[in-house]
Image 1 (cartoon, each protein chain N blue to C red):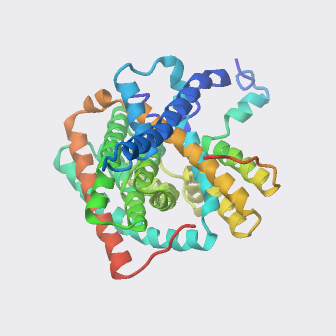
Image 2: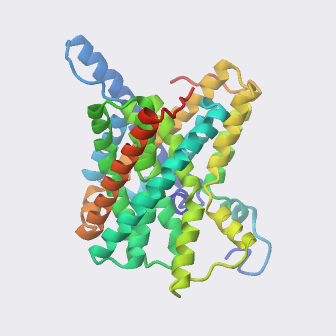
Image 3: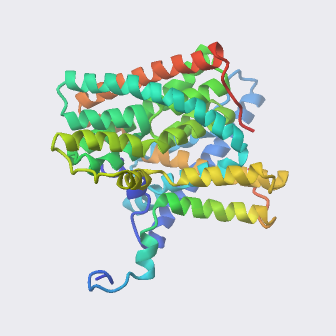
Length: 369
Length: 46
């Protein structure tokens, strides 16, 4: 599970020797390009043969090719260091994507999604903690699942590990469950979204609120449409920005029970704790959005930066497939998975209800450029 | 043995190693955007 569980800051760079990354990064590029051209070939073939088949996006092709490699021939260790950099490309893609958002829209959509995230967290987090208790999981595994499922995925679990002094086995279980559900959500949500008839904006909100790991959130959104992908990234970044507050809450809870190291008292110490856990790439996204809003970029250069974001995401999608080892996920054990499935269903249902209420009932919403 | 092991100042490679992935991603994307602002970013096809 160690390779699968590769969390952002701990495992994206596993070696100081830059040459060790080359084979894996080349594999990400190869799988990504294969996915991109498979979409072109598929559409061209369907057009020539007059088939009535859905347009299969490069996102899905890249993930499927990556899955096939990892789960058939396996990933040789020479590729591992480079393949694990996929979260690094994801973050570059997110920062560069800032160029497609006007800062005012970011603040407005961030504010709307913040309300939805807080409602989601309270409802889903409570239900997951209750389900974990019902299935006899340890309190800390329940906490990790609640953090990972209702809030921010693998990065949040890793950020909480030290703070609540969780056991490695609990962390491994929680990460495996989150990744398994990410894979399920990746394929299930776009199908459900089309069946329900969600708009790109609504689906982007839904994916951003309910898919746990940022790479899978991005892929799920882009599987639906580019517009949905952009919204999903923005909403998920807002969720990520809350990591510090949530981890602090759980750390204080476990410390009060004498089962974790105390957090230093005082506002300054707590502010430092939150800053330490804060995903810094969100600041990069906001800075790039501010530059675009200030009008410092020509139309052509804006398109160029947006294309850098697309290429970075392409490597990420290849990495999502290459890092998903189905046999490892099956070995996780059924109980944490059941709790995590309950979490996914609850979060997805609550999020969908919130999205429909706010977009169709209250008419809140904003688009990305 | 690192510089820290013998109590010395951290080496340049150690200092670079302490920069997290989030910051590296922001630095790399920031350079791309600055090149774009300066009109020096070549055409990136998709």
